[in-house]
Amino acid sequence: MTTTTPPRRHTRALAVLAALGTAAALLTSVPAHAVDTEDAVPGFPAPTVHTQEAYDPAADFTAKWTRADARQIAAMSDKDAAPRANSLPEEFTMPTVPQDFPDMSNEEVWVWDSWTLTDENADQPSFKGWDVVFSLVADRSLGFDDRHTSARLGYFFRKSDVADRPADGGWTYGGLVFPDGASGAIFEDQSFSHQTEWSGSTRIFDGNKLRIFYTGVAFYRNADGTDRKPYDPRIVQSEGRIFADENGVWMTGFRDQHDMLQADGTYYQDGAQNPFFNFRDPFTFEDPAHPGKTYMVFEGNTAAVRGERICTEEDLGYAEGDPHAETPDEVMDAGAHFQIANVGLAVADNAALTEWTFLPPILSANCVNDQTERPQIFIKDGKYYLFTITHRGTYAAGIDGPEGVYGFVGDGIRSDFQPVNRGSGLALASPSNLNYPAGTPFAPNVDQHPGQFQAYSHYVMPDGLVQSFIDTIGTSDDFVRGGTLAPTVRVDIDGDSVTVDRNYGVNGLGEWADIPTNYAHSIPAGADPRPLP
Image 1 (spheres, rainbow, N blue to C red):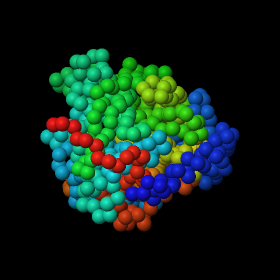
Image 2 (image 1 turned 90 degrees about the vertical axis):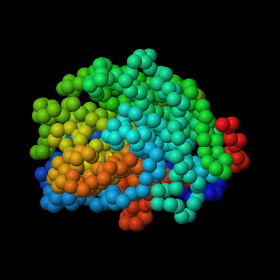
Image 3 (image 1 turned 180 degrees about the horizontal axis):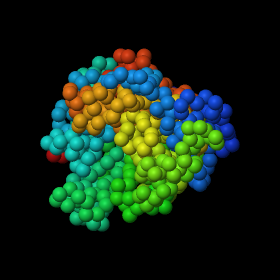
Image 4 (image 1 turned 45 degrees about the horizontal axis):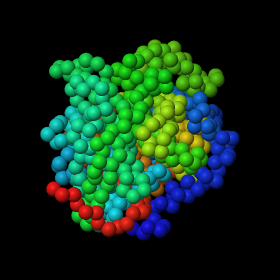
């Protein structure tokens, strides 16, 4: 690995320079990328027109992923696709993952949501010659579907710049990041039945300082599994140090936990409004258009009492006179108003990144979907891409779409985001057949494509590489559960188009659990002294 001009850093570096060079124009640009309503698919509405125009990050403007947008997914699905066939366009679909996958942890732990060691630009540095990733892990004595209330934050490492790696990606499990009990100390009510650590992001700073941003969660359940009070998710930061020598990587610190954000019930739905609310997955970055500012995106829900009929004409997004439009009352009578996801935004108030202020959400999906998980900002060619993931089962009544990545493009971190790929938002689907029910990961529908649940929790990396974890591969007559990372794939990102690169790897599938770094962190390469046993 060279420390001067890394092989894959140039894409994001050029993006940052382009963004800096155009910062003054961001607030006034209105690109000519609006969808022509005359291009509607027969039998379906036209997608909503979005300008991509940027606004000040603190402005009271929230882009909408509308029902008119999301219905484009069904519009481009093949209504004649046979059972077990993929009904979605191949250019937007992840290649099928085989069932005979290796386990990156050597059967030590279940592995699912994962992310890289990153810097302020979301680039991925190696540390003293090692690649490092962070994952949610759980002991394999638990059933795979029982892992969520017992998740801990673990880490893996491998040597950088190795040409030929073993099938499992060559990772070594380093263990848990936080000392036992540290993440639970933030909760005033210590009577929780389960306390767990959910997804986030990890930033490296000068030297070997790490700051981990994650979701701390407490559950308060009775012996029969019912809730005696709503669960309590919080966005938390903890600081520690990373070390390495020729034998591997280790970490220290992370004892102090900073409880930074709790859902406010004003912008972001809280437990008093809905005991099933979503509030998690912090991703932090510095915006080149606003030097000196650090921002965070995260998953939330629109602040409203569960079941309140809040969906508006703007949430639906139909053009005036569209013959396939719905009314707010029609969709809410069908129950769509129980799905009110959004993507939140916050700004740091101090250099230690322990104090934050909520800003209005940058995207809402009212009456469209209930989850916009693990959002991230990706900057390329002066454009800001908001990527998020969601499930087929969290769509609102009357909307259908696959498990996978959804993308939106604009001219700033707060924009009138345009959904990518024909105005739908679908960026990278797991192969799916929308003509048949999905089933569940533990009982996938026999007529569904075997890849319906093959991968989830996708994370978009520099150069368009995408990592995810394996959930279930197969259908009810023949399926296997996952619990390790899937093959890496690559997407080409160009304007409002995101397509699978079939020339990457073998027909689009790269190596298993392949998460490459794209430059070397600036730190002396000498080995660190190992702590005494």
